[in-house]
Length: 67
Image 1 (cartoon, rainbow, N blue to C red):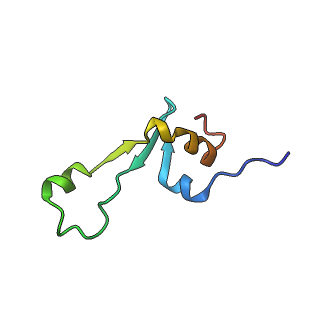
Image 2: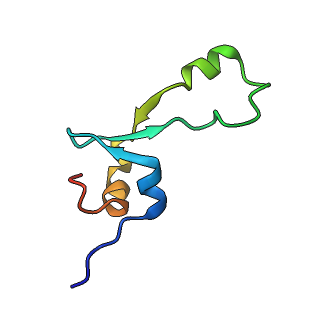
Image 3: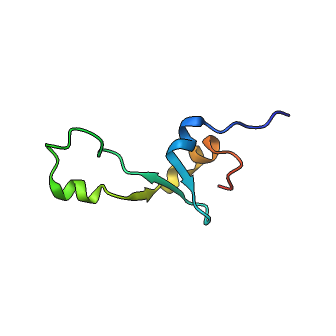
């Protein structure tokens, strides 16, 4: 059987942590920032983890990563 390939877009956007959770960047912080409040932009800083309901899709996109 051939090996399962990782989705190239997913490997650029997600990192699998040692505990099995998946780290992702925040959305809505790249452009059109003038109409967003300073508080809103501050809360969009940093990274967060993928929700548990999306982990099935993550395991399909990142096979062999231990998810």
